[in-house]
Length: 371
Image (cartoon, rainbow, N blue to C red; front, top):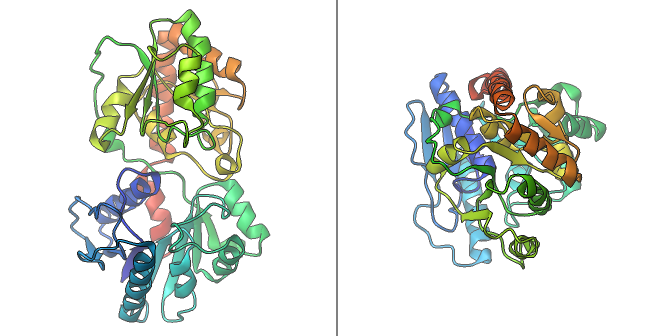
């Protein structure tokens, strides 16, 4: 039996969407598997999707976890129950290298796969399940297979002593069916960013500053920031920044938007933007939102960080800007707004890239080939 072992189900976040893509692909390809969730998230969410070949098992039932200590105890207890249920020859996949993975690699009767999409220094799974960075490398050496999302991650683990033959890149994956929508031509022109309104990951403050430049020559174009609205305390004061730059009437902070509404909001935009800084997260990860942007067929402006230039060519399938260069990023947006015919062609080629390299069925076969 193949198990996808998870801590909890939290909808509308990058790793959840990636896993849902795997589940759909495995189900469509006729691969039987069981999805396991050990403890609930704060809202006790469950997967709404129905599968023919995939079963879902929630170990937590309706237990209340009102404290971090109770959550910790319930996680350890349910993990022990899961391990006790394993049989010879079972395969267990974990997203991230965490405490569950650490326990599993020492069980000789099962094969353990893991996938990591961020630098190992980044907290994986929360305090309940996280293990230290140096432990992740030790666990990785014992895995039957390690799947990573970028060239940098592959090279990093190999440099730490993990056998090259056990490390394989699985590209970012997207569900193309989500984006079979047509533009509604609502009349309001806007560029759009979708995701966390933070600065360390996606450089939203840099995006706002670049948009200030755009707004001078294109005063009728707005910026939509789709996702949790920023606060001064948590997100670097991006609301205050918008006020200081005189952009409050030009920037729309949408707040959280239901997942089913996001494809239409992205499709209706003139340009989709991702001003990612050159950071550890950008070098070793790969943004899921970029694949979703490309699937809309709209033109994309994105910074040249990590593996992004390996897939996208500047002026052909997207416009690529240098990180930390507000003027260059703004000029790329303005060029697309001023050249709509070229923007359409770039958007089409960008969509072709997403369909060719980020298809969930194609990428899932890399995992299936190792079963």
